Image (tube, helix red, strand yellow):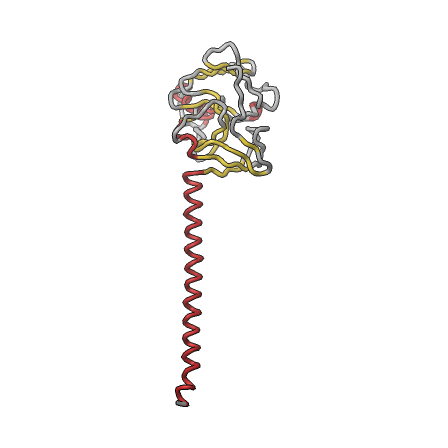
Length: 220
């Protein structure tokens, strides 16, 4: 009986140690499982649902400022078409490793003429009413004419005096050796629908700004 009493505490200590180890394992596995779930959710959100972007330049000022962070929805155009005035994120046609953000101006099948700092769609006598421009458009504001191909869009930055946009991409493609002639370079002026990554919805840093319905083309 005396020997049994001496052995009993040691057995209980071992049991408690084993239970503690098992509890530690369960806790570790729980954290690992939670980490995996978070990684999967973040991957799905960023790959298929949202775009989280930081704006590196002033090409969309003052609608979107340099350094702003924004959220875009990748699914915006799964069942709908981009509309004139939408602000979109897309693969830069001249270098698809870069993501650009601009405003849709010309739709598939339309003609876009830039004359004296105004935009005319399909030969209209009345220019677009662009209240979102931050200042008078004086740089490269005349002598451009584009015929937008099917399934493509013509885009411009809001800050027209400081924006590398559809006006210049064909020339850039020639400089980079992606095309040998102006005719070959012309398709680089447009964004193919399949290269659109999503629609910009709002900025959340440094301020909250809703980016939908920022254009009101009353003159159309």
